Length: 421
Image (tube, rainbow, N blue to C red; front, side, top):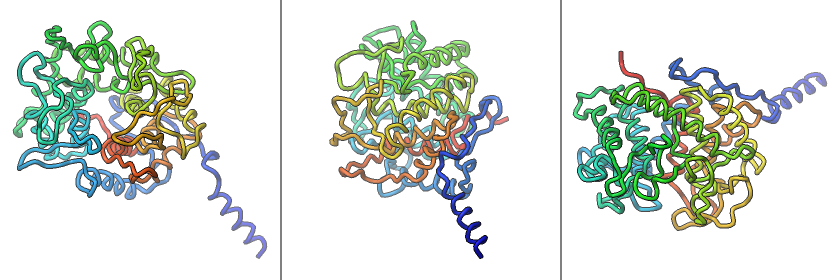
């Protein structure tokens, strides 16, 4: 009897072992452009495949159809995604919606979002022809005429994927629409301050391709693997240029990210230095910056050409956040890891939080990480709830979208969509 009790205690102790004792996740050494294969990190860690896909459906449905949805259909053929807390429609959310729809093979949602965006957001003439107004009211009235470059980045890539997945003869010529955006961008010559999406001197994406905003960039806009997609399938005669942009973008990220903390600013100069603008938005790691870990995970998963640096980056940022408390790290820092002096508000709320968006993206980078903490980041993300914070703030839009993207990455459902043979 005593031996049975001892054996039982040992068995319980085995199951109760801290996750730190588990072996590190092992990042893959080849990318999906080569293999067309994707990791399901959740399954690797022991989660049941059925549970993973059930949770993916749950997260998607909560965003698109639940009581806190951000997706709204208009009439028989259109729809928009709204940043609820800011009461508007943004090219960020609309283009994210297109990417989600094409990834999950939701053609009707894709087409509805595209039609709304083309009708209300895209400039059809003038110096900004081809670009999309970045913020509109939900009735289609423009709050701003100017574009934000990340929207076009996602629009083009999602349209190319739509062309590869569904073809171009079902009512929307997706490839022609992507080519139109790229061609219109490359034709910009500075008239009325409007420039290409990609700064010609540095071959890096602009923060906005208009006026002062074209003089600097945003680290979270850098998705070099997207340029690899353009090089392969945009068929716009610029394949070599887009491949060069991918290389430049990776080189820029090396300069932009702090080597000790793994943090980056929201905006910075093309050489990776801080703007030193004196404004609250710009020099610190805040809301835009949350996307960088996820973006680097994407490039690692798809391209895998910068793996040594990207693995080190993943380990570095997870180590820093872990040092602040796995379940308590906040969502704004100076890039050297010190506390910010001023908190950037989210909507009408102003507080530091353990934000779901950053919980999600810091877990997504486990695709590139090789450390004993990465499992804990993934487990924390799996168990995270999308619900109001202690101060009552709830972000259906940004937290929700980053949560869905990160879950798609970690479950192997954020993929390169190759053309049908």
